[in-house]
Length: 296
Ligand code: GDP
Image 1 (tube, protein in one colour):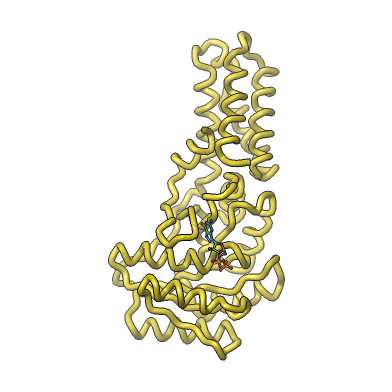
Image 2: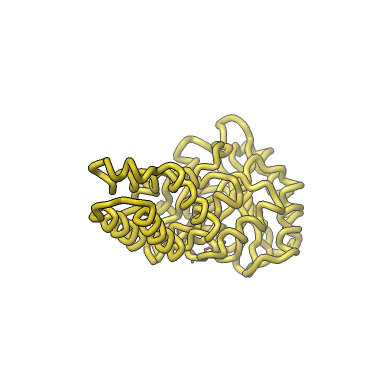
C-alpha cells in the first residue's frame, strides 16, 4: 500500500465517524479499528498499532467528540500526535560538527541502499562545508568497492578501499587512520551487508565499530521490507549502538510503517529519507510533514 492509500483509508475512517450523529465508545472503537487496519496494512508493527490505539483512547474523550462540532478534526489531531510521538525517540541524533574529526559508520542489510546513501550523505555535508571521505569496508559483496569508487569519483569525494585485502576490519581501520591524517572532518565507513540477519554479520559490525570508534552509527533500511522492519532494526541495535536511521526507496511503493518500527527498535530518530537512485534524491527527515503525508 502506498502512503496516499493509507492516508485515504484513515481519512475515510475519520469521515465515517464524523458522519455518525452519536459518538459513543462503540463508534470511537470502530473508528480506531479502521485506523488500526490501515496502519497494519502499511506495515506498522502490531505492537505499535496497539500502543497507538491505547493512547488515542486515553486522550480522546467521546463526550468531547459528541459535544464538539469537529469530531473529525479532534480524532485526526489525536492520530497525528500519536504518530508524531512514535517517530520521536525523545533525543536528537549526533550530528557531525565542523572542525571535529568525526567518524560515521553505516550498517544495514545488503541491498538496503547503504553504499548509495553513504555518498548522498557525504555530498549533503560537503555542501555544508565539510571535508567528507568514504571508506569501503564491504568485502562481502562483489563489486561493492567499484560501486563506491564510481559514486565517490562522480561526486569528487576522496575514497579508500582495497581489491586485495579481504578483512573488512583491517580496511576500515586503515581507511579511517589515513583520512584522519588527511584532515577529513567526516569519515564515512560503508560496511558489508548480508541478505539476511546473520551472526557473522553482527560480529563483523561489532569489530568494525570497535576499531573505527564511530561518533554515529546509522542504520539504513529499505522502506519496502514490511513487517520485518522491527526485528531487522533491533538485531542491528543489539550488536552496535545505532544512533540514527535512514529510510531508503521512499520513491517506490513505500510504506510508512517501517519508519515507525525502526525508531521503536533502535530508539533513534530517522534523519534522512532516500527518494531515488540519484545522488541528489535525498531529503532531511521532518516528522510533521512525513506524518501529514501519511495521513493524506
Ligand atoms: P547496499 O547493498 O546496501 O550497499 O545497497 P546499494 O547502495 O547498492 O543499493 C541497492 C540498490 O538500491 C541500487 O540499485 C541503488 O541504486 C538502489 N537505491 C538506493 N537508494 C535508493 C532510493 O532511495 N530509491 C531508489 N529507487 N533506489 C535506491
